[in-house]
Length: 223
Image (cartoon, rainbow, N blue to C red):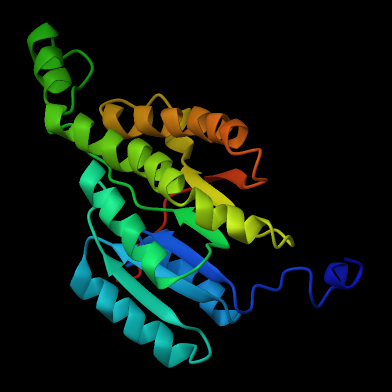
């Protein structure tokens, strides 16, 4: 243990398997690059297969010592989450870290301006797409919960090795506490994530899997 606390070893992730959703771009891709740059192996998951293939090629070229696996998949359905989880479990024996980056944000199609009157306020409020609410919660809230649940055995196997393995990160946002108008689907979903991470930390405490929150500001997509 003492040797693991040395400066050179404290943040060593070489050889570990890191699973990242939403990995074709944005924060997910940045995390993948950071892990691969430090000799970790990465599993990249995204619905955008062409961009996912591009990300894989870039990482393999830049960091040849890192193994890069891709799993194209849609995490916004129960079946999609299970399919992705099954694919992960057939390819690796344990998950040292799971980063749940995949998310979507819907904006109201109509924005109300102060003084516009009740009819315009009604139109702006109703312009939040009903399907957008459903899609947002399926991807931003349900997907990280159920993907983590499907991978408990693999996370637990990693956690048993110690040294910080078996950790799970869910991504919140400043939007979870902001009251900006007409982004209700996304804001509410991230508020749900804030509480979900606390619930999951308690549910998965027994196998010593670490469930952590992450709050990010706006990040420009790299692609």
